[in-house]
Image (cartoon, rainbow, N blue to C red; front, side):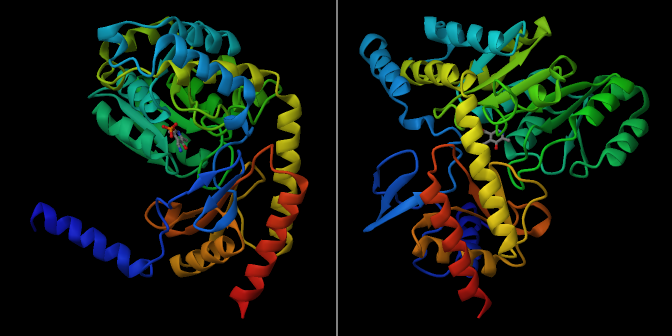
Amino acid sequence: MSLLDKLDAVAAARKALLPEGVEVFGMPIDEIYSSTEAKIGDHRILFLGTNNYLGLTFAPECKQAAHEAIESEGTGTTGSRMANGSYIGHRALEHELADFYHCHSCIVFTTGYQANLATISGLAGPGDVVLIDGDSHASIYDGCRLSGAEIIRFRHNDMADLDKRLRRLGERSRSTLIIAEGIYSMLGDKAPLAEIVELKNAHNSILLLDEAHSLGVLGHTGQGLVEETGLIDEVDFITGTFSKSLGGIGGYCVSNHPQLDQLRYISRPYIFTASPTPATIASTRAALKLLRDGTQLRSQLWDNVHQLYSDLQQLGYRLGPEPSPVIATILDSPQQALALWKGLLENGIYVNLILPPAAPEGSSLVRCSVSAVHTREQMNFVGQAFAKVREVLSK
Ligand code: PMP
């Protein structure tokens, strides 16, 4: 098969799954009105699939900071920090994140995806082992591939399986990096952190926790699962992203291991890409302040989470195992998921459609992400729309 034939096969496979004319992936958004509302075609729609957990994309403090940074430092850095140097903002944000986590070191990356790529491939290498949860995000899988380490998966959140695999490794568990996520991006469930920590200590391994979906969401100051569980000192490396609760783009790794800084000299996804723009860094710094003081926002977020989770449960939808800002409805087939997704869109609600192989264990998901700034009226409207679509689908 030629290179282009292979892409034709991809197009054919997609066409077989999705009806002609239904623009499911990469939907054109015509206007953005706010953190939660936009226009698609002629219709006003409610965003219920973005990861804008604290609704900060339109926060005046963040917009103002970004404007000022563009005025004073320009639109881009046009190169990597290794080659072109680190702006004051890059360094300041690293200090602020280290301070937020009470950690020794922090490195900021251009995306959350690169934060995982750079950290994992910087820590583990050929001859080492990466032991990862089966439901890990693609950036974790890709970081592991880039590392050249042996990749071993344990069943999602299954501690007996993790224990078994660590035992099998014997002495090699000492050069093993265990990776878990604060809140998993597909089903919205949390990692059993206390048990993972116990196992990693028993086997002298290193633990990396990706707090992409839990930053700003869990813990009194929003550090994530490490704060909710009080286990921050037991986690070796924490990665996360600016693209969800912080409403921007970029990523970070924090650690109390001073060796973290060495990644700046060996990690290709840090060295060989342009550094974050001044506007991105400035809005993220402003957002981090709001996130730290965001107890009120977190409480609104969790009110909305509990309302939607219980509404959907009462309507008979099959959901992920626990309420969280990621609320996944699990459908039996891609066709059913597509029908639910389309029905919601026709009712003015835009959510994520996740089809195999992206969803875990061959399932198909319609995934909602709840925001602190969804109003009570919007949440009621969402509940009514899910009820209406369920009636239509069950006919
Ligand atoms: N980790 C997890 C768990 C994620 O869900 C994502 C993004 N969805 C990332 C990392 C990558 O972050 P970003 O999109 O900001 O590059």
